[in-house]
Length: 243
Image (cartoon, rainbow, N blue to C red; front, side):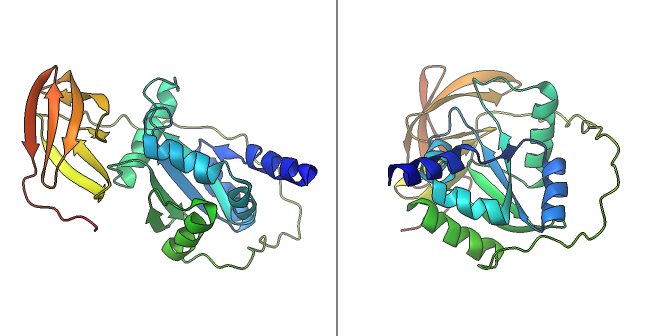
């Protein structure tokens, strides 16, 4: 039993995560798999950390991913250092798929077409895999590798071309753009920052950074402090919530 547990843990630890979406897509096409893009804030987003510990680090998910998925981490950390080129690539991907909150997971088919989207799923690997299969209509049968009877000719070394720099976004005064999640797990998007109650972040407003602390999320407004000054932000229109 101990050997079996150790083997499962090793399987989860050895799960490969790419940071280059193009390389991952090429691998998925060769192996007839799907690409899973994980848009995450790995060192500050609470729900992202829970998804990693409850699902991605579990051997059940590793076994599923080994036959069906090529995994890509699209990270937006606040403390961990990543290269400027990687920041640009991640920002371009987030813009392409209109990402507004974390975690967001986009599923691409073998041709690079988005076929599904989901977020945090409670209940561990089994519940997550079920939601993933429903969202992307992934077959429950194992994917068969594409036939390749002839040896693959040598390929030229991959040369990464950085995407063009995104056009800087101008942010005006602090604005509550959206409230998402269930009643018990709400998140707000204020200008360029996604937060939950109790979290603090630097927010871009009037072309400068201000420190915003999310105090309380209500049905159509949020109580915050901005550089220590309390205030309430309201939605421009009413949003509903899951019961």
